[in-house]
Length: 284
Image (cartoon, rainbow, N blue to C red):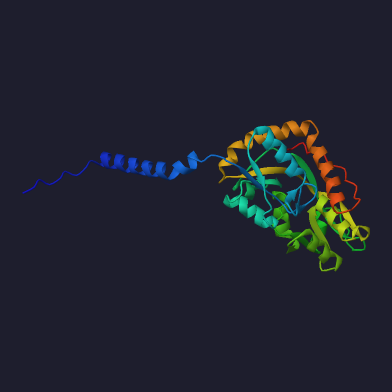
């Protein structure tokens, strides 16, 4: 007759369970922990002059030039890709398919998925309407009675996003061009967007003479780069931020923005003078 095995003490059972869990954790976590950043794959908005815009070769713009300068200085391999729509670009970085978005605003929702760099520029977010629209605008509450529009995937900071969802009537459209076409056909009475792409698209569509940009801006949002939290390259975020600070202080960022207004204008055979670039707000 064999001896019955004595039951393990509760302390021994707890210790064994702890060691088992830790072993599983190490086994599952090792690949991610040991992953190295071999190449930063960056993407961005396909229609956001002068920061980023689509060309036959991919993406161009001030943000592209800036991240290339930084990656070269840090000696980190970089590849800039066109991911399709802005919504698709955001999804690619959130999932880890791509590593980095090279120009975007900051929101609490995005911070759950992304690690932000320092801000490198800023942009007014404005209301645009046709010049003959009966829209007496002083602040955002004046928009409530009217039908507006925004581009899908766009965000304008937590405060304005929250207000827009709760108080405004807004259609969503795929692109800035769609937004202005709806405006031109009087399907909407106003649109909300960053100033620079609106100026560019209105000029391309021949709408500038009959369109007005309402003042004051709804907000002025800082422009950032951001890494996916699923990317091994996120370890470079602090170094990239440091280089952004240096290049912004040296005037390099503003020069890149002005250069890319000129580059885009020549590529489209459009003589569009660059607007005055706003200073980065003190809160950033």
